[in-house]
Length: 79
Image 1 (cartoon, rainbow, N blue to C red):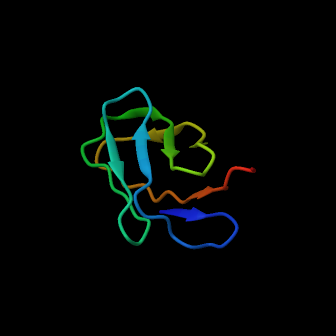
Image 2 (cartoon, one colour; image 1 turned 60 degrees about the vertical axis):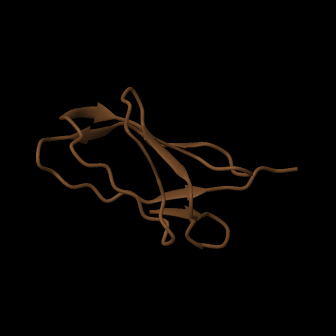
């Protein structure tokens, strides 16, 4: 799930990518996103949204047939 760090509101339409792969998706109206069929390995997840700073996770270890819940908080860019 991707949230605004200040307001706690979910963000719709955030681009979310798995670094080092071609996997990319966008958040839904509730700020949720899903990646399926991610191969086992260690990855960073990156989020990009207009008017917000980019967000990158620490490396996440993924094993076969494993689910991960990930919450990202994004901050607006200072003007």
